[in-house]
Length: 268
Image (cartoon, rainbow, N blue to C red):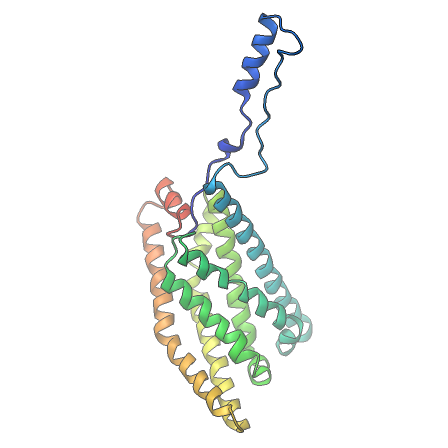
């Protein structure tokens, strides 16, 4: 998905200059003033813009994978020890801001830093932001006390750990077979579970808004139904996008150089 960077060979020190200098110094006597110390190339700073992009995307994907793994682990532990009704209290706020961080991906696509489709990226990120900020946060009791909230976080976190790990490995080299298989097969289950749970949370928030009444509740209820209406076409777009990517990988190109190259420039 992400743009390609320089290979690891670009970061190796230039030993040719050092060898030439050593040969010269041994074959031709030189005064102390004529001796020159070979310049040591810097490997800390990126050599060009492509490396800068690669370094940034490596860090972004690694940090995102770790954060979503923390969400996943918290949900599992809290569910097993305290029950799913305590998941929101233990990880709800953390998951909310981890998801908010994904707004950067819209900027990545819009500025051409990656070649992921802007429409697909915007749909996925915006729908989740609406969920955590306008549905769950204003109506925590009806939404988070249901099993749907826990199922939603599990689907999100599992999907994102796999996705970010896949992108991170793609930027470094070729993704492993198991990681590629997870990337292009788990969405068959995770997408329906995630989208179905999100729609259930929206419906529960709408019912709660109607029951509470009062000034402003009508607008909240209308917003909930608008968001719910967007989910049907939005879910279809997301699912179709992943099916297309899976077909591309399954066409015999597999994890060959062609697919890895396209992944590096951001089409996966």
